[in-house]
Length: 461
Ligand SMILES: NC(=O)c1ccc[n+]([C@@H]2O[C@H](COP(=O)([O-])OP(=O)(O)OC[C@H]3O[C@@H](n4cnc5c(N)ncnc54)[C@H](OP(=O)(O)O)[C@@H]3O)[C@@H](O)[C@H]2O)c1
Image (cartoon, rainbow, N blue to C red; front, side, top):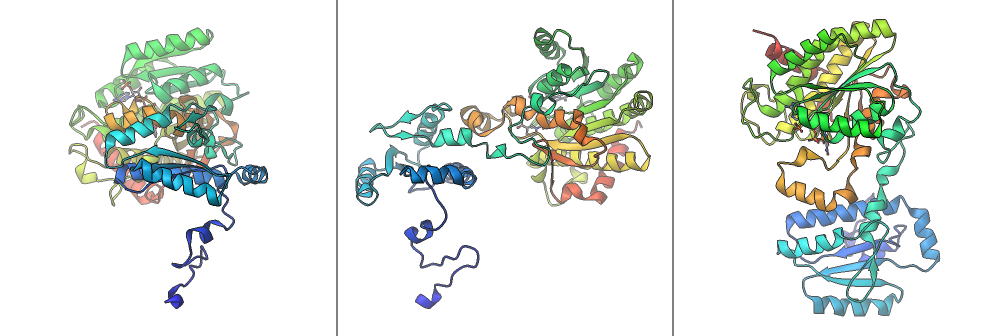
């Protein structure tokens, strides 16, 4: 049987390797807290695994700190999450015999009970950044703090910015005076912060919003902070082509120039089954509305480029969710059906394909206007308002595991204003750096097909 213990080529371990053997190698877990679970309910197990994976990734990035801790004699802290507290305490007592410096804690966790899981997760969520929490024998455990600090997202990309950069940081020192931008969905979340930071840099921002009162409230709040901000609020409901046409014609008659168009508005779910134009509501709002809006404003953008001699920029706020789609990517034959599981991903894939095909056409036409798309990161905003359970999870853990809205607006503001992005078109950005979207998002044929399809829907009959 020993002959069957072939070693795998990547890890160097085999079926006969023991737990001690596989952990005495380079992998140094000093400073990490392990959660040891004995019974698995798929959802909770998944969350725990994600936490462990994130901690491990952070740990691998943090070798030097670990080395320092090791030389200072600091041992890993472990939380034994067990159903049977007595059995857990017995294990806890046995471990120090072999490893006297080990920090071990026991917490009750019954994974077959949602209440028990939420209790443990709730206790964890109370631990504030920089603080510690104590369990039954006073042992401090710090793993959630490590996660909150971990911003392994904090690794800088070629632009010099990272996932933890804020919109103010990525636009530091940039002068936006003389530029005019439209931001759709500016009444909350990423759009509101994008508006604030563009205005801070001197850009005249037109907030294109569905809810005028909410838009005016955001404008007032920004004016309190930045009295010199130039902000207008205009009504736009992207789920209705009539509203988009009205907005575009009012904007054209206003005589305002347009340097930057930020197609930011988005919905993750919709209370109505079909849009006002009888289209699947997420495709209608997230893609078709922006497709029509962009086409209707393109002439103003071209004129602005001629007059200002400055490059125009179009930015589609997509999502990493563009990967969650059917095999075809865009189900053209189901666009007049109700929303399905893939609808959000499909609409976000459409945002990228739209930007890519637009970029190709603008280049072909010799226009000095770029079109790019981006994923802003995971941010706890109103986007999740109709997603009860996920919204609750984000409320509990969002502050530790996701970006805040200042970080969430960074990539948009970077692509809109930063000189590094000059001349770059048809790219997908993430964390203020160029990133790789899915292979479907790079499919030029699919982008052309979507363009023709969208044109056929939006052309006035
Ligand atoms: N938050 C994230 O984790 C995340 C991740 C990936 C991508 N994104 C993308 O980021 C963008 C901004 O989202 P957010 O997180 O800032 O969410 P948010 O706070 O809900 O903001 C979305 C904005 O879009 C507006 N909107 C929705 N439907 C509209 C319509 N039919 N017509 C006009 N405006 C409409 C909303 O207006 P109302 O307030 O009136 O509804 C709101 O102002 C979206 O495109 C989203 O897909 C977000």
